Length: 78
Image (cartoon, rainbow, N blue to C red):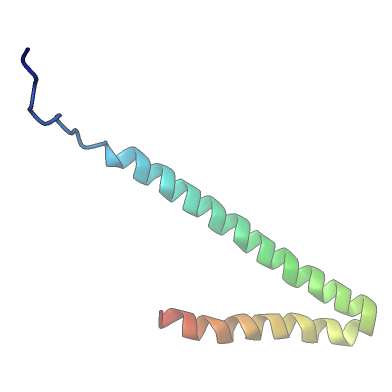
């Protein structure tokens, strides 16, 4: 009885479709995340206007923008 001791031939998977799918997924999640952040800032400003008055609504929105800018600086160092 003879056994075949040769190693199976490995074929390299086609990487291009996987990369296209991954890139589309990253684009979609970035868009959804950006929309979520925008809605969050807008709703925060509306909530601040409802709770504390219209003068504070602008302050809440400005604080969100300044906070995002301050956090962006250390993230670029990563």
